[in-house]
Length: 295
Image 1 (cartoon, rainbow, N blue to C red):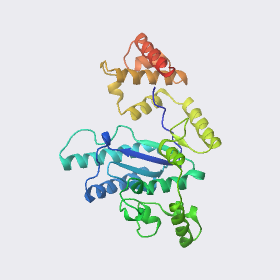
Image 2: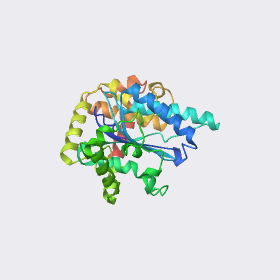
Image 3: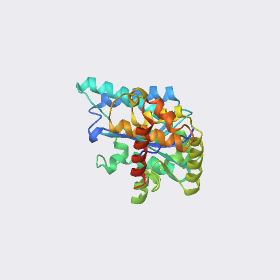
Image 4: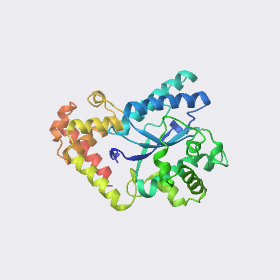
């Protein structure tokens, strides 16, 4: 089944997860994490996003990111590609460092944002690396305790959700961190809503966001649809228009055609002409993909 397009809500909060390819390590020493943070800081400034919480584990990272006007995709590509180049040069290796697709769950502020903060900061505890999250140096937990100060991390916004004064907010935060979290809540924070892994919140809020996203999708042009597919599948339009017989590229072209024709962005003939394909061949690929989706 083709992946659903990512949700972009300017100002929205996302639980973002990026893992090493095959769950391999992405950090080997302090220098690696320092370099990651240097690249991260540059990316936050370039794309005008805010980082509210983080945890750098050995083979994956968790972040609570509030996006600006630009979608998250560009920032994540900037961060992952620059760090991969650094580490591959350092350890003299080639190949993909990260999984091809990062995870991003749009989280409703009311009800789940505080839970997300706790989820991220307790990762090292759940992994049995430390007993106290304050003993793990590569998360933002100590910043919320006011033990450290990092200029590229936004602390005050979420800290204010625990109380008005700094001292009372810190005490409330510590108490909140010590509360037991249900397995059901952990599952939701890892995987998103049962019916849509891209989002997490109450039913009314999720329906509003998804309806607005669907409305925006219906007004997309063929250019918009092609660009979105290229970003999601990490391909270029040149690759899609090549003479390659790759089934993967054929499936991506079929998805573009299904999306374009379903939302009025273009006809099958227009999509076929764009990629230099025969109308009949593209129609067959669309039918195969439609059958897979409807199984």
